[in-house]
Amino acid sequence: MANLFTPLQLRTITLRNRIAVSPMCEYSSQDGFANDWHLVHLGSRAVGGAGLVLTEAAAVSPEGRISPQDLGIWKDEHIPMLQRITAFIEGQGAVPGIQLAHAGRKASTIRPWEGSGKIAPADGGWEVYAPSAIPFSDVYPMPVALDTEGILQVLNDFRKAAARALQAGFKVVEIHAAHGYLLHNFLSPLSNQRTDEYGGSFENRTRLLLQTVESVRAVWPKELPLLVRISATDWAPGGWDLEQSVQLAALLKTEEVDLVDCSSGGLVPYQKITVGPLYQTPFAEKIKKGAKIATGAVGLITTAEEAAGIIDEGKADIILMAREMLRDPYFPLHAAHQLGDTSVKWPVQYERAKPR
Image (cartoon, rainbow, N blue to C red; front, top):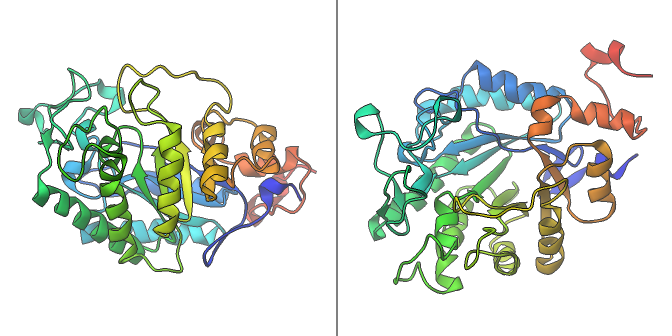
């Protein structure tokens, strides 16, 4: 059996292999509701053999959406369709997970295939929030700096969303603290210029994320895994960097976080990213070894050999795949064949098409 297809134990949850479907925005909801698109999109990847299937970023509040078409989990009415999706995913042998998110200063924007930039209030846009009144760019909304009451509301929104996620049947929760969204806004000195207990020092800038983890853990059962996605670096001078990410990951471990999902960038439009195959894998390796916590690798991992190599070499504990999973929902089944692993079972409905 290839190491890529060995089970991964996270608390009481066992993933059948080390391949996860990374959160990918679909921009296909109305009023936050999941629908048949989400059922088929996520369900087909469970059929395709993934060990963990994560939803796209699910907004914990209406103002936490990136676009009006984002998935949401801010009200109880969202739960029934999500229950249908989690039941199907589990029925295929995969583990259903949800990413909880607040878009921060990158909220109230147009979905990608319709343009870019902010949505005017007259066209259905809304007020957006950040640690400081600094917009992402001149075509994005000007955010309002969160006051103490607003911060408490954010923490409450994450807590309630986690409780709904449990009711909806999810077995894994991931907190989104990457890509220039609200929790990342607080982490980086490029977007956080506060002078209170949430700004300035590393301790203060990480405070909201740690409090969010605490709020989620207050309702998320001890026996179920909690993940956090971070941007390991801003790719910009004076911003959040890998050294701080290692420090943060060590703190997250003490707060009962089980795995750090290691992405990067998204905070500022002037970032300078050196892109190439496996370009973010070194972040996962450094954080895994430096903080002694399980990590996920993501970013231009496109072949079975690349994915297997990361696991074989101990650089990460799981591979989170996005665009390759869009191209091939059955990547895990195809990868097992390419690696000569005969232990992986195909759905019985598809057995007759299994390569011999």
